[in-house]
Image (cartoon, rainbow, N blue to C red; front, side, top):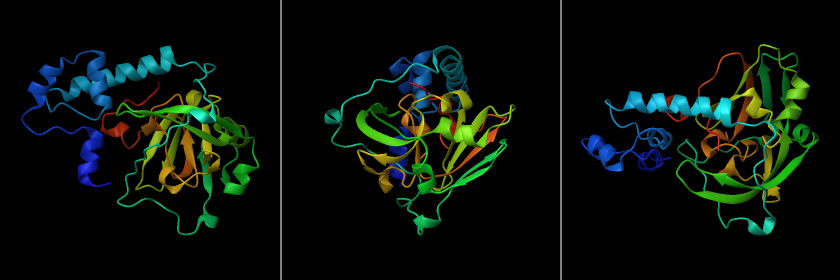
Length: 249
């Protein structure tokens, strides 16, 4: 991603207009948190307030709004969008030199660490759905995904009682996301190896990506290489820069 694209994605503002832009927008409360989610930190005077509201959003999303049984709406294949944009952090689209050697490592606070090939994953229980993808930039699109539920991986690696979170890491320039275990166990949270009835394309995270219609797009780690179970809340590429950690819809 070029610097221009990164600034567009972050909604970066030019120096000297932070306060005027903030007043003009009339941001406060939830609006302040939305500004943080879109990547605008408001400058030194506003940044602490944005981060405080981001933490409030995280608490409300995780403790009040999240339901382990509520399912996102599904659609028919005929309702798919013509295009689903995709972003990555590396200067060029990440692609494996030797896909046959790729493995997903499942590690950390687990009884049974795993190394799974794509064939291994395809032999596990399969979930498929057509859902709406929501981007933090404000757009949405409908696409179909198929893959293995994260809960099926959890059943095989058997996390220790102390495990509360999972760090999902990728080969896209060190991109990562941290999830709470409850969100990862949601029935619509999957490790997707297929999109729109075809193998997952490189632009959308091949060979494997995290997917869930209950989270904003930046939480759905592409180009997966590992899942690490931990007792401490892990950060993430955008989360460490001020985006809400929970990222729920």
